Every structure is written in C-alpha cells, then in structure tokens.
Length: 481
Image (cartoon, rainbow, N blue to C red; front, side, top):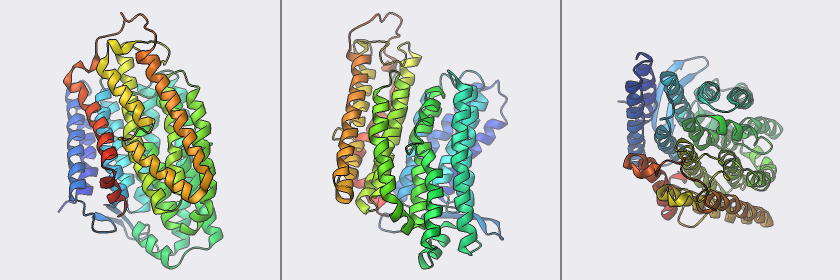
C-alpha cells in the first residue's frame, strides 16, 4: 500500500515526467498538467493533515524503499507535527504560485519542469528521514534556482542567478560536511535519522566535537535561513526571479534552513545547541533590527518584501534560540505564517507589475479608488505583517516574545522594535501605493481581481492566515508531536 507521504512526493515527479514527453509547442497542455498536479498535491496534503493522529508521538506515514545496504541508504519518508505543517505550507504556496505563472510565455516546458523540481525538493527535504535523501532533495532546491532566475527572471538576472546559486550551494557544502562528520563518527553505518537520533541520545558525541559540527550546520543552514550576516543575497534574487519562483524561494525555500537547524542541529546535537543558542539569539536580533532598518530604506516593493522576509526570519531564529517549548512553538508558527504571508506579498507585487502599476513604492498613489479589491488584499497583508491580532503572524510573534522575555529578559525589547519597524515600512507602502496623493492612472488597467478566478489564491492565502490566527491551538497541537 502506498503511504500518503510517498504519494505526495510522487505527484509532482510524475507530472514532471509527463511534461517531459510533451512537445514544447503544446504549452497549454503543459500548463494544464502542472495545474492539475498542484491541485491534487494540495488536496492530498490536506488529507494527510486530516489523517494525522495528534495523540501519537514520533513519525507517521513512514515509507521505506531500500536503496543500498552498505552504507545503509533508504528512501525513508515520514512526517511528524513539524514537517507536516511545512509540507502543507509547500502545497499551499505551490498552488498559489501557479496563479503567478501567466507571465511565462517563452520556454513554458522548461519553466514548469524547474518549478515542479522546486516543489519536489522542498517536499522531499521536509519528509526525508534519511540524511542522504535529505541532502539530495536539499541540493535540488539549491541547483534549480539558477535556471529559474537566469532564464525567466528580469533585471540583472544573470548576476542575481549566479549570486543566489553560489550562496545556496555554499550553504549546501557546509551541510554535507556536517552530515558526513556525523555519519563517520556515529559508527552506526546508517544515515537513518531515527536511528541516529536514538544512537546519539544514548551515546552523545564529545561536547567539543558537537560544538564544531553544530557550527558547521549553523553556517550551512543559516545561509539559507538568511541569518545575519547572510541576509543580503536573498532579496536580490527574489526581486529578479519570476514571481512564482519568488513565492517559493521566500515562502518555502528559506524555511528549509530553519527546518534543517531544528532537525539536524538541535535534535542530533542538543548539548551544542544549548551552548550556541545565546549567539544565535544575538545574530537573530540583528535580523530583527538591522535588516528591519534596511527594509525601511527600500524604495521598491520587491526589495522591501525581500528584506522584510529576511528580517522576520529573526523571529524564527530567536524563538529557536530560547530552547524551550514555548519558543519552539512560536518559531514554528511564525515559519508557517511567514511563508504564507511572503507568498501573498510577492503575488500582490506581481499583480501590480502585470497590470501597469509597477512595483516601485513611490511610482503611483491613490490606486485604491481604481483597485479596491487589490487594495483590501494588500492592506490585510500589511496588517498581518505588522502583527495585528487575528492573523497567524500575531499568534506566532507574541508567543516568541513571551519566550524571549522568559529566556533573555530585556532582549525582548528588540523584538518590539522590529514590530515597530515593520509597521513603518508596511503602512508606508500601503499609503504610497493605494492611498497617497493621486497620480495619473490612465495607463493602469482596471481592477485585476474583478475576475473571480484570480481571487482564489488571495482568498486561500488570507483565509489561511486568518484561520491560523483565530485558531492557533490547532496548529500548535501538531507541533507538540
């Protein structure tokens, strides 16, 4: 019997294989297959959440397909409460990103092959219970970024693609070094994550060695998670990438870094994690405040969203740095909410570009009179980013705030500063684009969301943020597993 985890992984794989056999000239059929794959993916992921037993601990829906015996490498898939939420995040953002693929007119076949590979890489990383396949899928994410940006991007796309890929691959190299060290020193001839968790729990590595391995993981995963000072490379790539890719990069790919730090760093090396966490808290505070000021200085909406995304990862990282259940729960909730929010913001930026408004914050004003629905969606997204109660972002950030106060005391003041900075640049964007002094709007198309079909992604993303905001205990209940 096929487990749901294997089915979730194989759906985009089969779609990519099928697209590979279709002639490039049949772009309509290629789009239809990609759409169908993401719709089915979302439905199956929802059924996985429905079927997950929150009364049990450990991994569920485990699938094992043996690959080699020595070393023992197995395609082993499974989910616990943490990975389950991130699988659902990937499916939601992947489906919503399909609404931003209309601008792709050239190389449609290649684009959707790369896009589906991006989805497979994220899902495989979140569900892998074998470190070989964890790295395999993690590396797919790093490598597929280059063609997505360089071929279908905009602006200085070649430079952006090269920088994005170099940093992604550099982070992957550190992750690979850490995995190899653990494999050779564990003496278990296995890359099974559950087996290594049990082995290192009973016979932990020497503390000095743990500290070294954790530092390697911190650099590797920290690069992808935009941990300061590795925060500046991502926004450039997000701004020049095609909109659907930007949604996946910032909404999902960035979460792989934080997830890897939890799954490999904190889980396998808990003593080193305790020693390193005050340093991570300090670096995360730089994300919250310094990168927040960088976001405040931006004049282009895409760059603002990109730097805001890097800044808000500070909530995730400082939550993890608290090393207590409250901080971990808050960090995971922020990861989920932030992924949905940043995908929504990049979709809005795409909508502005595609319909003549541009993405520069100061290019237009008074757009709300002509685009009332878009203005409402953007305002709701800005409120979520500001941590307004009722949105999932508020539930996660307030939980992190309490955890930081409990662990680090007055360092929590830095979290509040970040909230204020977010309110400044997000509300300024709302004012300058939609409610500022009116400018010439003849070149701007009519309300882009007048078509009910185009509203689907916005309703989904905003609805998820509100549902998780009003009922955060549902999501937090999964994290306890």
